[in-house]
Length: 248
Image (tube, rainbow, N blue to C red; front, side):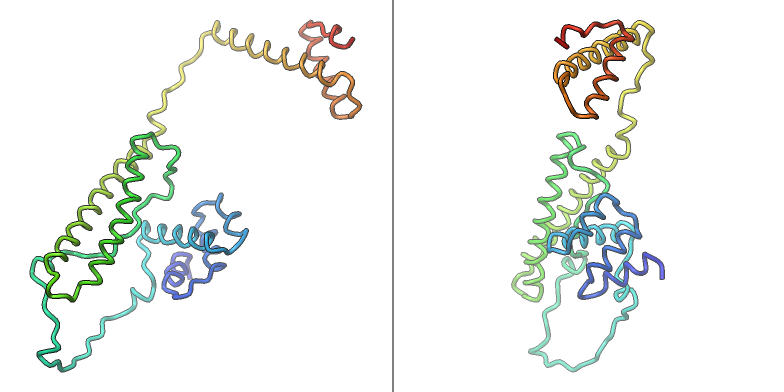
């Protein structure tokens, strides 16, 4: 069984095993920096972040829970009394494709690295995702109420409008993220004079650091500090910089 197949099976499991999820996360090599965090415990926060990461990965790579792929619709004929029949939805409502709103994110995008204008779009998407969940919950609650047809239409339009806006925001963010390296200015070759000035500045900083170290640790009794002290003295000697006054 491939890792993607294991993920599909895991997603279809009602009680998802945390350790199995961690192993799938490691095998998929999604983000090695998070492995230590997930291995440190199995608290609610660990589970929520792990499950969200795997669900995002599955959505991006179009991996569906295995049981939903294999499940076939079962039509059970049954007689209904006219009074028990549910009202039919209008053609306008039936034409709407109502889906459960998903968290539409790019797990590789880091919020802190985005410019301010794109951080605002990122926050807008987070807010709209919460709004879509609330609209979908209300829509599900009134889906069979014949007197709520207009409200169902409003809710459906609200969900579609937010999904389109969210997708447009992610397109802008993803485009910038993919091309962010190209926007960095290319460093020009420094002239010999600039290089000499940089070296002089670097040397001056090093001399000051060495003199400060000698002043601070001239009477030390620790072996490592004594060794470092001698190394810094030799460096100053090579540059013919006097430090005798500091040893008095």
